Amino acid sequence: MLPSIERLLILQDRDQKIRILRLELTNLPAERSILDSNLASGSSRLDAAKLHARDVELEKKKLEVEAQAKRDSIAKFRTQQFQTRKNEEFQALTNEIKRFEADIEKIEDRELELMEEAEKMKATVSQAEKEHAATKAHTNQQISEIEAKVKAIEAQLAELDAEREKLGEGIDEDLLYQYNKLFVNKGGLAVVALEHETCMGCHMKLTTQTAVRVKGSKEILNCEQCGRILYYAE
Ligand SMILES: [Zn+2]
Image 1 (cartoon, rainbow, N blue to C red):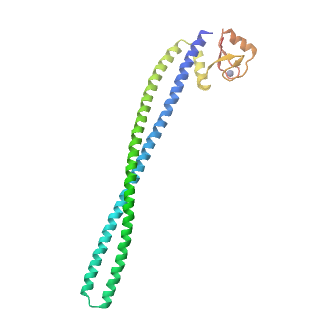
Image 2: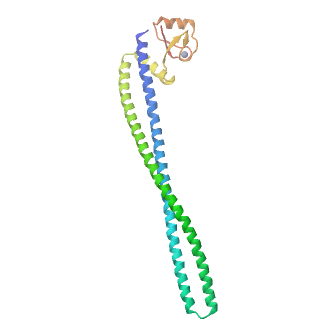
Image 3: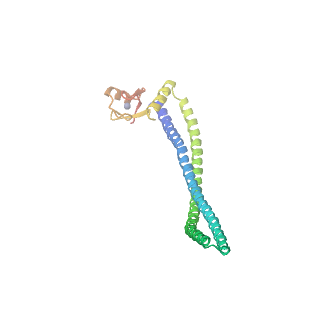
């Protein structure tokens, strides 16, 4: 095998590692943002539960005040009934009292419903709080794992970049230029083996003449179909 091909193969190996690591690095922010949005939706579920619980409490308080006002009115009507001598007025007050008592009954029914609802909401809120706390702990753990991964990949990349820089120094400039272009344009595969007279990059059969020259291992040759640099694997 030509020494320059050997060097290119080592370079290609490093470049492929770099390529995979870069890809991983590009995907990590998306993973991270999924975690962030999970956390946000858990927090908004909790907020919604708390808000609903507060609304229930507010309505309960409002109804208590309303019922008390009606009870006060009834007491006032009864006093007025003692004071009046007119039958008509007495009857009108009786009707008012009945109407108010019916209102109070309705309010008390609703109050009971709200009390049940408040109990339920208490459980819902505490469940949501527990779930959110668990999600938060788990998610924060995952986020710090991602951050550690990013750091590790960046360190690996720095090492590989330095290594590839050195490897490149030993290779002919034109050949390196050709290799770099192929690596980018041919999906990270610039130097490929010739097997059974077939290019292992595009899987097309080469002409016998080219195949023979590649086997000779005396010159740099390219696939006639895809242009990749070929070498013969003994
Ligand atoms: Zn080819």
